[in-house]
Image (cartoon, rainbow, N blue to C red):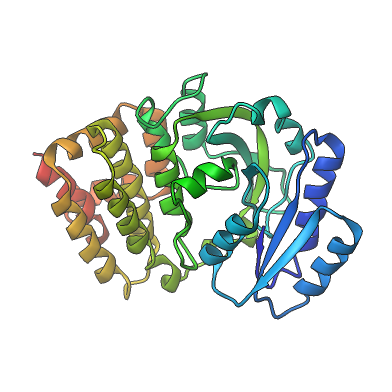
Length: 339
């Protein structure tokens, strides 16, 4: 777990995690907490847990952001599997029951679980995003790869609903982006594309508390890091054997959706920078890949309807046709290039 100035949330997270494993834990485990140079009472709070529990240990390093902090945890961890959690979320009581010895003994590279969403602490937890649920439920029931099921790339770039086999990440040199935001985009794409065994298991592993999230608030300094994250993904594709068009189109769906979200929610100051990157994106993608990308979106109307709604895509597509919105120019160029 990475934590920075988490004195208001870290105790609740740790207590929920410990309670889950006390209630239903069937596997040996360690809890490694990387303190990202906190200046509040975080270190004092963590020390109390270290004294009480022999399997809890902490590592301190100078403040560097979430990416470097998670990479530090990856190197320091000792377990066969690694689960990256955040200090501002909560672990459901039944989460540890989903992690069984039989599951971990299969040497699966990535095990994907469901998750819950808590946008307001006064409300009951919601199920995971409909787009992710749709893709997870339509995935192969047995182990698969991204080549078998390219749609897995279009899911949310989350790491806290997954267990990664640690040796798989180390041997393939898969790391987080060394930045404070969008650090999980490269590991999402590289890990899914490199994995020889991906498995999806029902059951929520984490409760995502968006009311605590830094990225839920406007922050151009963090959003501008998105292009850098995708550049690292493209370096991966260039250095590795060619992937089939279906895989690349799924990647472009993921990329376009995320870039549009960044562009749509950014301030006017940031939009010219994102627009410039979008221009490069449009020049780099072939017409065939673009066709597969659009085709894969519209073949899944349930997913598309939800994705377009939450990202303002529907309104922007209408504006793109009428030419009313500058934000819609990215979508407009997609259709111009196709037709």
